[in-house]
Image (cartoon, rainbow, N blue to C red; front, side, top):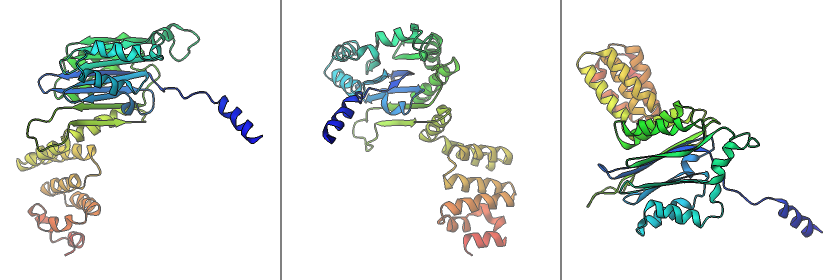
Length: 334
């Protein structure tokens, strides 16, 4: 009797379906650096883990809508076999019974791209019974060495703004991908709102390189009210922005611009608040400005996070004016 009951229950459970990643994304190739990348945002959990795929020197893929995660590795394999992005997209969608619910973009290391948007992905925008997607937009905009695509969007202006931002942007590929995502959101983005985002950038290793890092940017935010805030912070850390700000802060302090130096160091600390070196550098800036109280507070936080900094602080000439203070002596163990 128990076996029969269990069989009935199992039969009543519907088969698992691929989650919907109603989203906007961009795939790109940079011929100057040979980088391939993907940027994505969605009102769905962990889009940055599901949508982007890339292999250095081969291609990049964004699989979304009812995302078939097999599209990524399959498309990359087909590109390696010599198929064009258009041929790869046709092959993977022809073989997929669920293709009407898919959206996929593929770009190769020649900058050629192809996009497929399934019939249901488009039709649901005109279906009054589909209260989530009715009135939304799905499609794509191709560009030179990139493609922007999305579904459940506020309008075509979303992908057009992304294309313009990427094409006319400055900085690294990752920064341009981030700017493109921001531009898409500024035009309404996903009509359901925001939740997750990610950026993936890969680059082939040069000959005889001692590095093993091909995924030069691999960041994502899985669940946030505004994932772009955290995504940009993570990107800044990846690109070494805090170190650059700290270096500029030291230069400003050396030239006697104390207030500006402190402001720059605070920017660095805001990006990476868990980094003891950023707290230590801020203590240095305060000390150089003659602000003993704030210098001690920042130094205490740095030492709290990493006690080994006691010895460094005790021998640091920047803290010369603090060395007679009982609080300083107690902090560094003198």
